[in-house]
Image 1 (cartoon, helix red, strand yellow):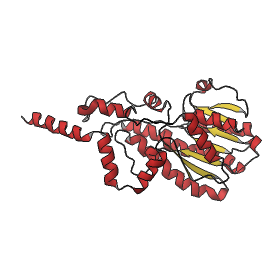
Image 2 (cartoon, one colour):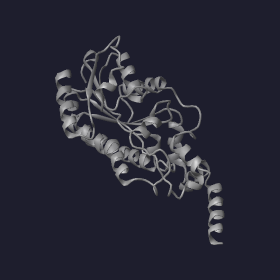
Image 3 (cartoon, rainbow, N blue to C red):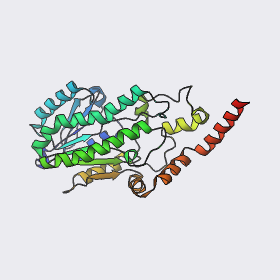
Image 4 (cartoon, rainbow, N blue to C red):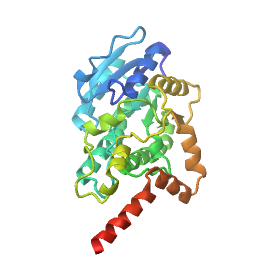
Length: 301
């Protein structure tokens, strides 16, 4: 990589109150220059000039080849031809039971979370190769094997895809001197759930949903209101993540945020039946099944 005074990081999907925002602040604090990108350039007006490091703002739609090409050209001009860190942070969650999910919205979620990540990495690879840089792919504890929480299946599947693509990318890019790190983020206090609804999640279950007998609890889960207390602050999360990334030999997987480490162990060591039981209880499916049976009995009369 370039000397520390010349290092540049580009972060996709930066928004006020989000994880990308926190990473930008932490990286700047380490003297690393940051290119913050967002779908709407005006949404980055809140960013203040840093006390150290250099901050640039770019418009970037990760689902648009034209936008990506333009961002690459502008990044090359800003940095002089190299990129030390590409942080694929752009993403959101479409929350809906799979039986009710819109196929169009599932595809849209994958376009942003998965296919956009791949195309952005392909486009920025020459700059990363020049700098012998690093790709950081934002996955989630929802993207760990067996962590299949009901009602967020589309988001979980997209993050599992990110995990697998990132693992392959790590091996494929190593001959070029480009490192790849998969970031498994646990519960962190951000605007994630609100942004998910703003970017395509429906407001609630449709009237025809077979889950309407547990509507209140299902919709609370879709809004993230049943998540356990103890979420980490964005600042703590970013401080720990950047500390991991700046190590001489950064790990292939970084697990930061509330429950990230414990969920990894649960994923790695638990049999499928135990994970299923955990989510069955979280979703209160026993009470739901009893209500279903009662409802079916009424219909038979």
